[in-house]
Length: 133
Image (cartoon, rainbow, N blue to C red; front, side, top):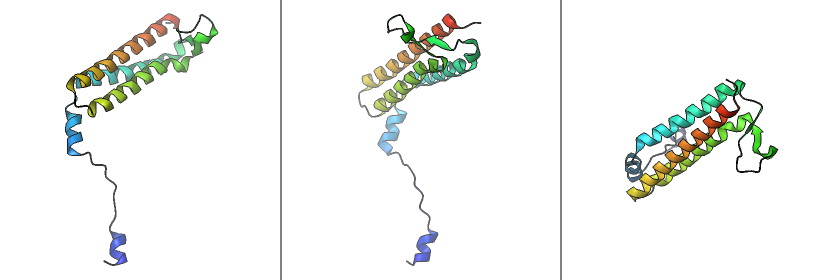
């Protein structure tokens, strides 16, 4: 094969999912909870960004700390609970793809949904607590 034929041939990088992994992705249980969790996270993040003008410059986010100024943070950090729950959701999906145990898969997905639900409640409660509507 000459050099000119080699240069004409273009190589493309393609990511192929092995057939077994593709079947595991298709066999994830409770997909509706995954979609609901994604929708809740996106909705909460967008609502915080939309309601930014109704929030004070600092908000109480860190309730685990002693009552002081240490609990306060900038209003932009109100998206942290939803971003954290989004990361937990992606991590649990990743682990459920590679798990063979169906009970563990369901537990991971339900746990991610619970984290999403509780972070959404926290964000909504803080918004209604300090917001001026």
